[in-house]
Length: 388
Image (cartoon, rainbow, N blue to C red; front, side, top):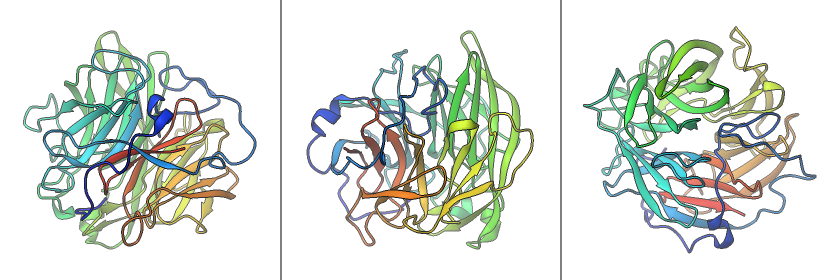
């Protein structure tokens, strides 16, 4: 979210001990009730807050690739080894280029559990297989579908300012890192975050969009942010094809910002009974869209689950194994655990540096494969870290 930082881009401290050896579950993965993308099945709920025993933050690795891209946003754990994707490694998308201009990052970095890193893809805006209005600026919207198909959102700018932001697209890459398809239009307008679930040869993507009227608003809040359900169908070795787009949420507050580029509905996570939780950053609340997998109409912003309290501009969102909602704050360096009924049951500090601490630095959020730690990217230090 930041356009600049005086803090070092080097990782803080050593690796996370035994935590560096575990995989990382995607922040936007279905964590219970059904088979998650990649075939993982959730464990039974455990008593007490998920964050209860987690008190230590450690660094796993820097997320800066050779070309210097910074501002890590999206994270996703690779569940199956396919092509250049290795099980247990984590994909991280970068939003800024080496000169720190937002909406110009073009790289996906693969981070191993032991802290090793490699470049998975560097996307050339001039050589895309289809339209992506405005070019490339990779966002928090990141997932890996069965077969190793990587889907990542793009909200591009020409010069790092909201005035030049354009609609962007979803990019579909194969397991070797080549862009094979773009998904644009039909409601896609600044794809900001995403979660996905797969059934057989069908994938359902849930995508937040933050550019509907935002640039024209000139910094004023406009209540036009949306959530789309995009249905894809996979056939053999061909890239998954979009077969339907349904707007299931709308009316979320969004605004441009000179340092944050854009503020709007961010993290999404699918919970029990097909409830989609949304981090409404501008509204400082968590909302819930019921029957998200099957609904055919727009439910607006949905029902308010929780607002205020320890929430302070929630950004990234993940659903914990027991069903609670985990969110990270834009206004401070905290992670908050909220029950589906709205009770805020735990708070931990992830980033205590900066003024204010952690402001705008926390986006991608993930529960590890053993379901007993939380991984997150810190875009002020350009690192992948773990709370354990």
